[in-house]
Length: 571
Image (tube, rainbow, N blue to C red; front, side, top):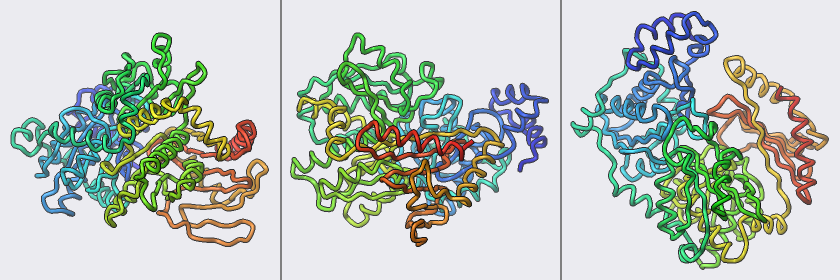
């Protein structure tokens, strides 16, 4: 626990680099609750880096928390490698460019070479740069799909995926030893550029990224001949330039962009929660359909690593879930590769363990295996890297998370909405050439394999008391595991924190075989299920429901019963 009053006093005296911080500190003078919220803890640094509200204090994103993290990272890299270099990128959020340049100056002051994107770019392009430039690390300033008041700081390892637990723990050790005010080495960004310690990333690398994405496409000729009509929104983020460039490269010309959401704007004025998982992000695009009847609405989040779609069907735009898009991509990529005679032996689809099991059913149709990993795309990145090390990278078809993140190709080690958007549009054009929409294709898949309803509910817990409540909820469930949920017997209870799953009928226990994580999973009768997972980046607990029915109505009824019963544990 921090000495809150002492910290507040010191910040008032020392936090002079940013006038906004001084104004905020003065505005909260004498307001105990406001001061407490900013200083009761330090932002936690983990495999996802830092994420928090922008503002003054140790529990906020500002140049001092960014500087401390970067100095810790510099110390770790210098301890671990000879002459390390780091790639840096940033998104459209408030102060993202400022934080990125400050981080570059800290690394430069520590003698670490920095490769810096000259303008905002999607997160997967940072992953790509780390690998192509043979850097020992990467930083991107982004808070992904969080509301406008947030920003974040993500670190990448030499393979281009987010830091592993071991590297994050070692970096955090150096961070803890670094004083936010006196312990940070700094250099003016422009001076570092003049000295050549910071070097801008050139257009040649961006062109190489485009070429890698294009190589993942399977039906460019069909896409180019189609009259597919798309409305695209980058949600005032980083995708505008790069997604549109890729759609043009594969011949999709009928693309209209949502003007109010086209240019970078960290305030997200028309969409305060820029998350492609929610319907609100499509409101502006749907308004445009009165004059421009598109086949497909496409939305990428601010750092362009997630993508959501809505599809025109019978005069109505229907939102597709992240699970459904994952199933569609698996079906399209596997079937199309088989059709073209390029489906590899032992093809593999990789997914997070909370992603729909319908993916497994589709993959089995093409004799492809499915690998299930913990939530977090770094695990998929690690898996691809291991395949590559064995000379088996061609086996990888697609990786996915139900939270709208996808990757095809091995150019990046993170979810990539540039390649996903490109493939989704190509896929839509391909099925349109067959006379059906993506929505209709999904219904065909349900008719063939059965109806899987997957829903996620988020329960938010704000502030210090909220964090304590989250711990209490998980402890209660862990110590008093339910034997049934909504009348459905729990067949297997899995605790990913202990690494053990237990068959409740026999009492037998077995190892899960994945890295330990604070997750509880319950497999129920009838192929139903519930998974409880505290978010690693936000103050919320996510509950993932699987309801398996003979049709949509039965599955909906099962989901409602499961959801209603779980609420008693999360109040």
